[in-house]
Image 1 (cartoon, rainbow, N blue to C red):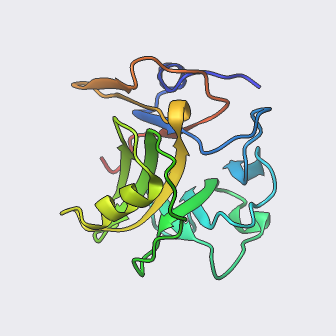
Image 2: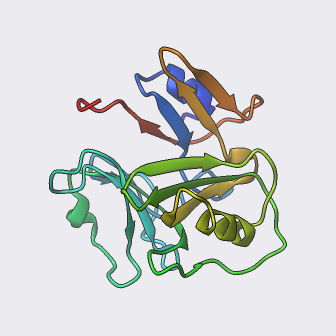
Amino acid sequence: KKRKSSRDWLTDSSAKIVINAGQYDEEFNHLGWLLKNGKNLGSRLHPFWKGLLVNNQPGDQKYPVILDIESKSPELNDFASNNAVQSMMLFDTRGLIRINKSDRKARRCVVATCVDSHLYIILTSGEVTLWDLARELQQHPVRFVQAMAMDGGIQAQLSIRTDSFSMDMPSLQIALPAAISFFRSSNN
């Protein structure tokens, strides 16, 4: 398995934004689904993580969406032409925080949607508990309606390159076994 930092994943692609692709075990196997063009590069569907970040969802949507799979566990063939990553829901559209309280603090990477369905990528610069981050996002003026926690600690990374802006967080990055790449859509 080739591993690269988010900066290197971005450099080696035409993506505009790259983040870490969820959570891994000690052998760098993705914990849960990690679908690329319908092929699962991860493990089996994680029984407790009920969030899927999905691109190319059937229909007219041209942007990634968060699917909450709490009430219905999907099958791989439901996503034959999609790219998706599974992780834990931070909070759902009912406002229910879906993680346990803990004192464990780390830098965090989160994807969230707001009332107008835009997807936001949030990377904290400091360490925070998931519970505290969920509460903070729920009280944010942007009005986030649901959020998924990707990974925390040294794996939480974000790299952005546009014609007028460039950023890597953190500046010192470790190698990741996979990354989520966001590309400019043909509509922008």
